[in-house]
Length: 258
Image (tube, rainbow, N blue to C red; front, side, top):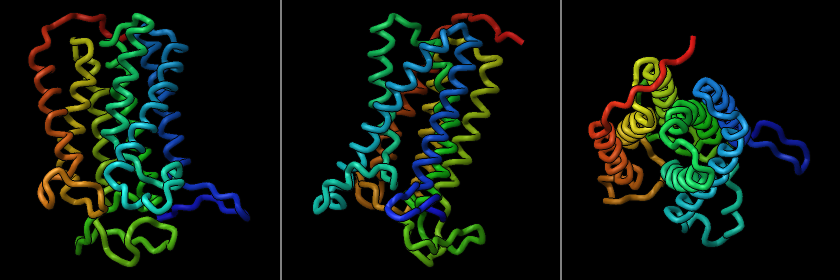
């Protein structure tokens, strides 16, 4: 909708990058506050957030490039221009998860407690980050005649211009914000350490699976025309999260301080 926030001579600030950065900062702020409430050193949350951000950017960009290589074959330098859009969430999630495991083991931290702190923050950061996708026009939806369709007209947009499209980016932004609210509410009664992360993965994978049917951008297919790469990835993620939720035994934790 508005891909360029500021343009002055050769200096350009992309709205996508700004909203992505704001989403990360908001997520870090929330994680620090949640960590403080859970008795975790705020400096630990800051350090961990830096490593997770690095892993998320590298992983999400790598997965996007691999699934859309023809787009970069002639101009490989474009691989570095991630601020223009083009990140695959599941790629970032996998890399960030592996880095998180490494960090927890290296510093002998409580993974379950950190997972509960991180889950709502991830969802909130996503909600804002998808607004960045909307501004850039990436991750756009299929053509539709629905009255809520959006039409991209800015020539710098990555979406097709002048065509009524499903606002798929807004669908996911609303869904992840709803997941954030659900997780924040659940923390008041949930008594199993680490379960909030599994609930997040279950909720997000399910929502993403549905939203994928409304996506119109080229994003890779596991089964051409039937199952996208994100859907194929989300199925085992959702099933694994559900399995972990069901098998985990109660482990009482202190109720949050008021």
